[in-house]
Amino acid sequence: MTPLFAHARSAFPADRLFALAIFARVIETGSFSRAARDLGIGQPTASKQVAAIEALFGIRLIERTTRRLRPTEDGQFFYQHAKDILSKLDELESITLRRSRASGGRLRISCPPALGRMIVAPIIFKYLQTHDDTLIDLDLSSRYLDPIQEGVDLAIRIGEQPSSTYRARLLAPNRRVLVASPAYVKGHGAPRDPGDLERHDMLVYSNLPSPNVLKLRHRSMGLRAVNVSGRLRINNSEVLVSAVLAGIGIACLPHWSVRNVLRAKQLLRLLPAWEPEGTSIHAVFPGGAKMPARVRLFLDFLAEEIRAAI
Image 1 (cartoon, rainbow, N blue to C red):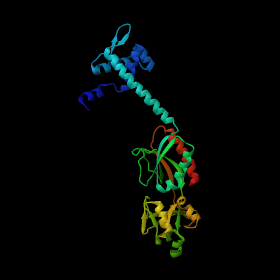
Image 2 (image 1 turned 45 degrees about the vertical axis):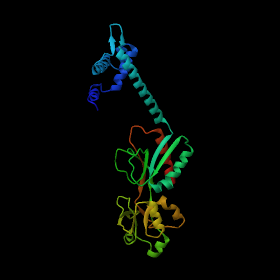
Image 3 (image 1 turned 180 degrees about the vertical axis):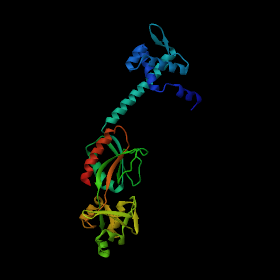
Image 4 (image 1 turned 30 degrees about the horizontal axis):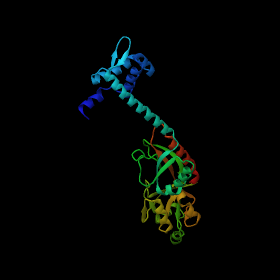
């Protein structure tokens, strides 16, 4: 920044656009008092703002007489450019308002791979069938995406969300179940009590905050915490399902991720009276006074559909 420009920034009225609007209205009405009335301010304020512009540039913008005001040659030049700036501002406000109210447009959504493929993607397909003006960019990734830094409209996440500057909406519970393959149960037996899991080969999902601690709740016996371990740790839930199907060990998985193989009896549910402590599925999005209509409409649709899908 040059010294001259730095000086201009510090000397120009704080609300520079408003100062330009005052000056333009004075020229258009030919009167400080009428311009002030139109803009809802006092006449001294209008005079002060215009005087500040003149003092900054060391030029006279307005010739003042007892009967009328008229712009000087410099004032006419300044007025034309001020009008261009104010016109661009009006155009920007109009475009932004239309975009904020538009139901269509581009949506960028991030989601964990398994949840995205099995649950969220079919919901998106259904939404697109009835919203021809919507474009969706779906990012299926296990990595954390910062909604603001990555330009994400919605980040769908599993688990409790830490307090932050972002807003979160609960979409659905994430019920979990203990499962193993028939081959594993035949070779190692089925656990009869949560404590038995400490002697079994557990497949550990390493993305959890405490992957080696499993909490289970019984309707009458309350909550039990069990330390578990195994030969395989995985940070991808779909690979974890494959490992269980291969008979490597026991895993605690979201019910939606294994319900089809449970129905086909490719996996067996273990300790059905003990419910693993569940988590929740949230939509996380940038905070703000007003959510764009295109985001709100999809989020409402997602919240309704995902509960039925889970």
